[in-house]
Length: 451
Image (cartoon, rainbow, N blue to C red; front, side):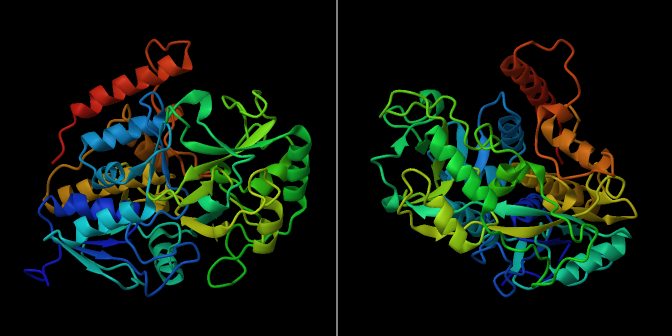
């Protein structure tokens, strides 16, 4: 199938980080074997065997340059990211966010990798970390049990974990537009209608809905293949704070949703010409516009409870679920002190970590870590100096954080301006400060010489 069987680097995991890492290394004249266990061994969250499948949201976050996520995307474009190119090729309307058609995104990535002369895609599970040859571990938050045990054996520590959730997806045709309406916050996005579908709540409807969420039945949390978790957080509900299930938010405070995923700012109900008390937004989930996901509504409710409670949403009384929300166990290493800023394991520098397994969070953060791991693994093999991304860049700040953060309360980190070094003369305006951070970061990364 390939011109020769030489393998310079093994990449384990065909998610966002693994695909980006394989592409970067292959473009630097290395022969890559990219292993992906799906579809022969599926996970509790994936639906296909496609490379670079987006499991949760179909949004890669804000495209605005004064936002941390927008800055990170621009840095990746400058560095020649394959997956950012895929996102641009498959993008769909989402206001100021970069959202993609899941299938088009995945198909583009898989096509590019499969046709690359230096990449061999192997569809099988890797149970033990290969010896001697350099390897990038990008097996993701749903790393298999056997490989997790192999990772534990080389790190000398148990893997940490948290529980992550997925929002439901419904069909467009089942939305009641006598109640729901199209609009983007403050009129941004599509000038004629808006890029989101909005389901407005009165105060009474909101509190009835919040109470229903709070008292609804949840699915018991498990780890691998139905086993009750016996790890470091056994017996606890260990959630990632950046992606809390809506029922957990409702249970913490009845007003939490109105100030979180259901905040109504910038949205006027055309029936009343007033801002609703709360609102749930739906975002286009595929290119055809036939599917929409419930924005920010990750959940671990039982399916029958999702049917009961989510049909209380105004405009979704007869919603048809294409995919129910669900929760799954996410795995990551206690990376501070275990890996360095090059993403190498400190006690075996031929091994690199990338993706959420390494401690970054979010689609774009995963891509960034894959890009850095692919570049640095290539530099190691070619006996070149490894690339230290400056901490004034968002890529560098993320890598510095996961390798140097406090270990005791470590959780995966998304791109945010708080991890960048302070500005010399910061503006009082949050938006202007974002522009200042971005200008400094982009000036820095454009000077960076990549091998």
